[in-house]
Amino acid sequence: MTQLVASGLTLRRQGRAILDNVSTGVAGGEFVAVIGANGAGKSTLLSLLAGLIRPESGTVTLDGAPLTGLTRTGLARRRAYLPQNPRCEWPIAVERLVALGLTPVLPALGELPEQFRPRIDAVLESCDLTPKRLQAATTLSGGELARAMLARALVGDPDILIVDEPTTGLDPQHALEAAARLRALALAGKLVIAAMHDLNLVARYATRVLALHQGAVAGDGATAETLTATLLSALFQVKACVASTPGGAFVDYFPNDSPM
Amino acid sequence: MNSRAVLFPVLALVLCALLVASLLCGAVWLRPAQFFTADASGEMARLILTQVRLPRMVLALGVGATLGLSGAVLQGLTRNPLAEPGLLGVSSGAALGAVLAIYFGVAGHLAVALPLLGLCGALVAMTLTFTLGRGGGTLALILAGAAVSALMAALVSLALNLAPNPYAAFELTSWLMGSLDDRSWNQVWLAGPFMIVGCALLAFTGRALDALSLGEVQAESLGVDLQQVRLLALTGTALAVGAATAVSGIISFVGLVAPHLVRPFVGHQPGRLLWPSALSGAALMLLADVATRVINLGPELKLGVFTSLIGTPFFFWLVVRLRRNAP
Image 1 (cartoon, rainbow over the protein chains, first blue to last red):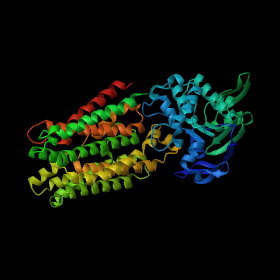
Image 2: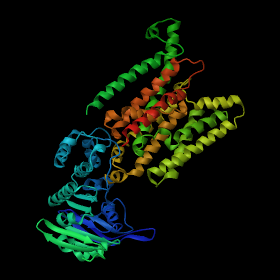
Image 3: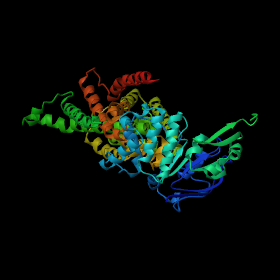
Image 4: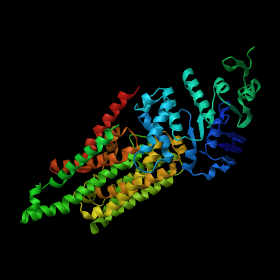
């Protein structure tokens, strides 16, 4: 089982601590939602866990081996990373965009080898993109582009999927769908780590919550126990309530000075 | 998508036709039958073919392919459709080297001194650009290239300004305009190896350019070493375009236009664009070279001037298309 362990991660920019001594251990089968206010260090933590940047101090290990000891392509084969609002710069067909996810396993020169075709077909099908496969990626709607990027991330069959704000900018239907997809991937054994702002989606779909407050861990554990009104009040400086409803957990929040 | 399967045969056919035209047309029009006659006119035809037309054809082919390939690489690297081989200061560096060779009269004593110094100029410009722009990402590299380019252009102007006599100034400007006239096998042997090594380096950027369509962060997450790709693109361009500019003078627009001509046929994917763009660059260059020989305006029509003249309308077309596609 995939084990990703961070210990004592610290990163400073211009004297200000972006992350301060963050430690956690996550494993395959978990859908970890990283929550926190804007500027709490969520994106930085994801980049560190993805091995894209190096911490000032502290280490990240994958199955016991430090990320810094892995080659770029070796790491790229095991984890996929999607930044906030991923974009495609050229009007490439969706199936070609998805194939870019195979970059770490492709030979240095030449066309896409035939043996990868079935994988691309399968991932297009699983992300409901088959009818769109020849359409230019730049003409997709927001929800379709998000699915295409997810397919791009999944085509290499990574053990770890790290996604920065996968539901931001999506309408309710597509946001629910995206969250459900991430949960299904976790249930299938992958380690999914996502920074999220929609707390209702976090409450219903994430199996685990990692809360950051001003660069430090403010809460880390199973969603039901960790995502509490007290934690949310501390994180976001709001009055919060977490209720359980027949449709799943429900989160709402109000300004601190509201009479609720 | 079968358009790429059609593209290669079509490009190859066009190229072959242009190669034949390039061998036969010029101040003396040759007929293929002449090469097989045994008399003095056959002797002359064979001499023109092997010593004048053939090296010129090979140079046009090499210079055009080099410009097309490097234009495609730089457009992919910067994700900017207006990028061209001169972007990183390499061509102006080569121009400065060549201009210095003419200015100090070295070129008069030793014919290969001009391309040799041109090549040195390109390498110096590349080193400057890379040192200046190191560690600052692609934008820093472009800015450094613009700065180096401006410096080299200023020094070229200085050389023109200080030219000892009008004849020297004329020689300098006419070299700067770019031409393949009076080139021989010497230039081919000198520039060829650098162009081949440079193009080989550029070819290895393909995968990374594809990944870069997703932006720098995603490309890095896919295992692309951006620093290494920038170095490959810059070194490859310096060697290939530096050598090309050193033998032909500055040829503008071929490197800019060639990728655009074939981009729709490869599904806009930057990595798959490389070889088609090299072929279309070679075809454009041969076409322009043939045209300068066929069009007779009295004085020789310079190749660089001609490519600028036919290249500028292409810019207008880009603007119009951008306006049409704008939301």
